[in-house]
Amino acid sequence: MKVLVIGANGQIGKMVVDKLKESEHEPIALLREEAQVEAFENNGVRAVLGDLEQDFSHAFEGIETVVFTAGSGAHTGADKTILIDQEGAMESIDLAEKHGVRHFIMVSGMGVENPRAVEGNMRPYLHAKFRADRHLEQSSVPYTILRPGRLTNGSGKGSVNLYEYKGDVQYGEVPREDVASVLVAIIDSKPENKIHYLIEGDIPVAELL
Amino acid sequence: MKVLVIGANGQIGKMVVDKLKESEHEPIALLREEAQVEAFENNGVRAVLGDLEQDFSHAFEGIETVVFTAGSGAHTGADKTILIDQEGAMESIDLAEKHGVRHFIMVSGMGVENPRAVEGNMRPYLHAKFRADRHLEQSSVPYTILRPGRLTNGSGKGSVNLYEYKGDVQYGEVPREDVASVLVAIIDSKPENKIHYLIEGDIPVAELL
Image (cartoon, rainbow over all chains, first blue to last red; front, top):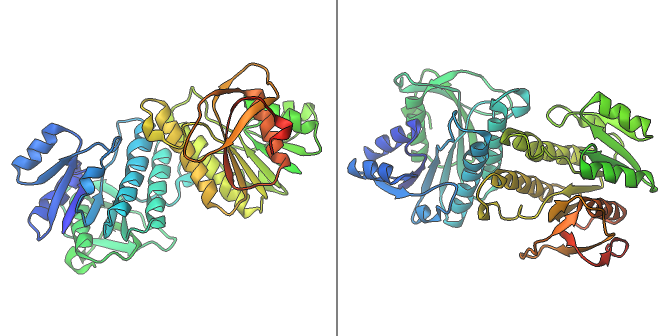
């Protein structure tokens, strides 16, 4: 399948692209800068130049699956939280709908289900991510929403704990590399319009879905 | 009717409360600070203490009409744009729905219908306001959305140009006092689930709706 990776230059995005390169799927990296496009192409990956704040509809031609793992990052202001995390995601969902995408995979996060429980800097971010998730749920695009716990940089274990959201959240952390592995497993599976929570655990990723 | 004015201490909010005081309706002012509550009560207006960033559901007891004219203001950051303009509005709509409110009147703004046409500081605000408007349209609460042009401080003319949105926007400005008069006229009218644009013009407010 042709898989558009939005946020391909991010930490998780890069790992997803690398894993897809070794799979039967074809990753297409959406990137904001010419230099990034060159770097990905030199690495043998198809890349498309596009900015989530502008028109990036051209990136969706022929795309079957979308992985949205873009984020404005911790060092930008709340204006980018609106422009990227919320509106970039919502526009991606709208474009996926228009282009008949068959599976939209959203990288969300724990806590998004209840922003009002949180005070401080994280709250606007959680609101924005929640609105994007809700927009996906209300769209006609088949989807999977993944809400990992606190992301860590250690190497992946290859095993995790993936559970469906039923009103209770079991907090925890999870290495980014395991998040990337789970995303590839989700790409391989059929969309079931579900929200999955992800923390570290003992179930091999290959046995998850 | 009991009319909850959210943003009662703002420029337009204050004028709406004053006009309602002289009408057959009962304004209830939602205010964030104790001192504001005292000031409104000393002026003979019922007031309720509540913060849009916290739980303010108590304000909706027995309310029939809501006017949302709160705004985070031009001098706060985009975090408040999310917390107040977007989420405060959306939570108000959800609470109105739960409490069986019969008419939700949203003060929106011109340009909200197409934030991507705008660059710069205004764009996150327009996105946030658009999402709030859309949330209202998708709710089960009968509504009116009012999108005034650029707000001015001169005294009202008592006449305006109010037109329905049909894909084209005719830009212009309008005094805040005329916006307040139109809001009171909308309170007096039946909700038709419409979006109205408002600029200065020659039609007397009394003949509008």
